[in-house]
Amino acid sequence: MHTKTFQKNKEDFICDNCGHKNTGNGYTNHCSQCLYSKHVDVNPGDRGEECKGLMKPTEVFNRNSKTYLKHQCLKCGFIRNNRISETDSFDEIVKISNQDK
Ligand SMILES: [Zn+2]
Ligand SMILES: [Zn+2]
Image (cartoon, rainbow, N blue to C red):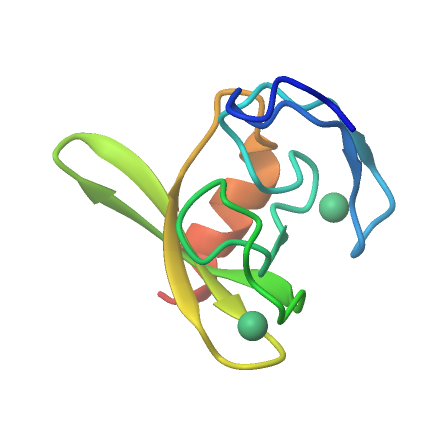
């Protein structure tokens, strides 16, 4: 058992969609290459969700001059908005923002 349980999540993770090894920085919860996420949180960072479905990036939008990604769970349909991280693939962001035009 680890003693520091209240730290921000900084764990590295392998993307279930594309296999990219992501280095955790405590802020991003999605793959920096394909931008897929996983339905693992009830509240951001708590890892309390049982679904564990793959979450597909469906939309890019701006709000209050910040850029967000809309993720939809492919298993249960749950939708969550996540901030874009500066390490995210710009090509993928462009691809997603172009697909709904
Ligand atoms: Zn990926
Ligand atoms: Zn789900």
